[in-house]
Image (cartoon, rainbow, N blue to C red; front, side):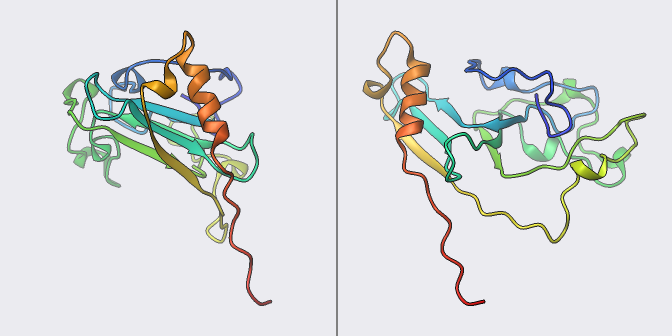
Length: 176
């Protein structure tokens, strides 16, 4: 996991794991599994599927620009409590039920987790998102085939595929 106020110890690299391994079952289900500054993520299909998987790749116009990405085999609603925490539908991480479907999130920004001196504290001002802040961002969703990743190092083949995607530029501003 890495968030804008929890990333100093996160290593940069290419990692592999199952979707179920990307979820941390906190005692009270909550936001989890985010990967800050992700350049690309590959969701692989079961063998025998029509395609080998789906490549999710940042297209911010700058090769090193990343997005926040996460994926789960749980309903996203199961993690986020209503304003009154005692009304959360699932109250314990052990109650989470995995599904066949995969939910994934691609975010240009997230506010920090907070909790500097207790878990009730809001994030520091530099880790908040101002209401008037706007973003221009894009990402690719691209199916990939087994042939495209046939290699003794499939992750490197996927990274090369992600880098080969065109960088989308934001539309020009009209008028001023």
